[in-house]
Amino acid sequence: MWLGTFGRKSVSDWVAPHRQAMPLPKLDDDQVAWIVKEVATYIQKQRQLFIARAVHLNPNQKAALQSLFPASALDSARVVVLTKERVPNPYFYAQLLPMGESFVYAKAWPRRNV
Image (tube, rainbow, N blue to C red):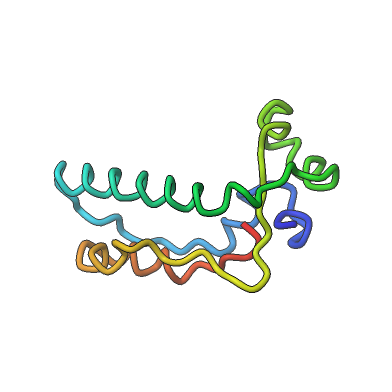
């Protein structure tokens, strides 16, 4: 489990040491709207792909997350553990790269049991 693996008490305990200052890209309204639409579509497709394999959080996972989320959210949350496959980068990722360095940085983040 993510938080248990890293022995952290909160998400910010894990993120803060790994975060580096990175300027946000300057995007116009049309670019922001496009990104929001593409991200929503990507998330929906990934959810459809994995939902059949999703299971409830086990008691240890709930215990590790109880200080971060209400019990109702943890009771309704589902998780899929990937062992021999990975969630692919979004199909629109290549189109984000010219928009700014922060999109390149996002790809470099480790994806450990998130």
